[in-house]
Length: 274
Image 1: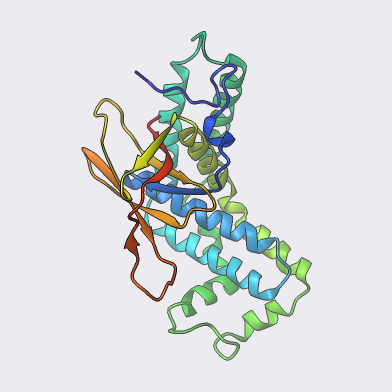
Image 2: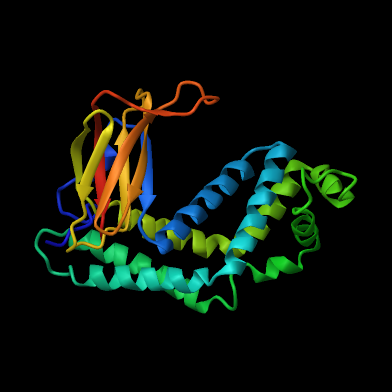
C-alpha cells in the first residue's frame, strides 16, 4: 500500500515531529538522496556561519561556497533536482481527490513544487557558474589545495577582505550565495516531502543489533533512526538492496575504538519511501 505524506494527511499530525527525541541519524539508499543530504549540510553550514560576526566564521562561509562551486561543477545537480521534483509532483498529483488527504495542503504543496521547478528551468546554465569569475573566490579556490590552511602571506586579498566591516562581508556572502538559493529551496522541499512520507515505528535492537528485510514493493530512499538525547549509544546503519541492519555503538572516549552496545536499545525507525 502506498504511503501518504503525513504533512498532507487530514487531521493526522506528523509523528516524527511529536517525538521528544533530539538525535536523528539518516542513511540515504541511493546516490541522488546522498547528494541532496550533502548539499543540505553545506547550505545549513553556510547559513549558520553567515549569521555570525567573526571573520573566522565568515571564512568558513567562504569555504562552504567553494565546496558548493566544486560540488556543482562535478555533476549536473540542477538536472537531478528537477527530476526528483517532477517525480514527487507526479506522485502527489495522483493523490488529488483522495478523502483522507488534506486537499488544501496538497494544493499548496503542489504549487510550491511547481514554483521550484519553474525557478530551476528558467535559470540559465550551470548553477553558480558566475561565481567562478569573482576574483577573490577564484583565488581562494586555487589556494585551497595548499596543505594546511590559507594564510595572509598566501593571499593578502583575503586578509584585506576580513578587515572589512562585518556588514560588508555579510553582504558579499549573501550576494555570492544567491545563485544557489533556488537549489537550496528546492532541496529543502524535496527532503521535507521525503522525510514526511513515513510512519514511525518503535523498535528494539537486541544486544545493540537490529536487522530488517526491505519491502520490495516500496522504493525506500532514506532510513531515519531517532534516539533519546540522553542515549549513550549511536547507530551505524548498513543497507543493501534486500535488507538493512543497525548496530548501536558506544564510545565514551573518542581516542578508543567504539564497541557494540550489549544492552537492548529502544529507538524509532522511519523508512521514507515516497
